[in-house]
Image 1 (cartoon, one colour):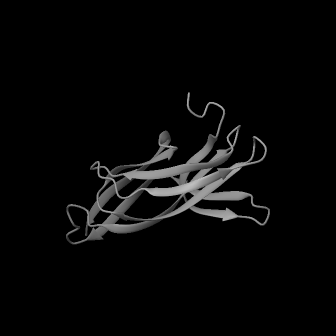
Image 2: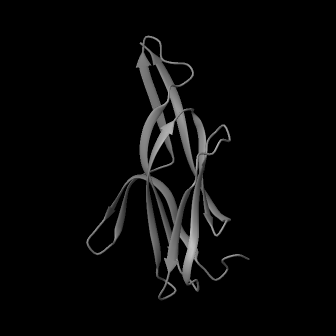
Image 3: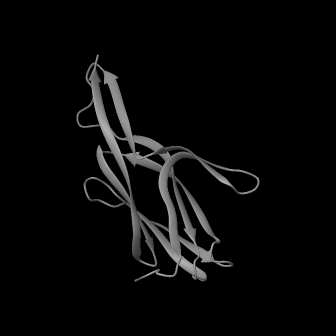
Length: 142
């Protein structure tokens, strides 16, 4: 089994904000996995018009027996199956088994269709998890 002895994924979620205190303790504000995009007007657009949305992806890995650099890749999969360019990063594991890395990715997304988006998390090209994000479009004629 890959990563049987580490590193271990201990958290993966989307939220609106991450606060980092002086002692490096993190607080996640408004953990989300779906949004409702409501558009009001005499003729709300059909299909949904693209809009921008910001959120944070929080990942926490613990070293276990892993040491040294490891490659991390985050790939977003749109409801259409399309995938914009991935986010690539190198993490370095050191110290005791319970030490690790927190990754906070500020994502500035252009949402161009409703449906289920996935954020696939890969470590050394092995998918360790998927994080869902659903966009619900509600046109409201006035």
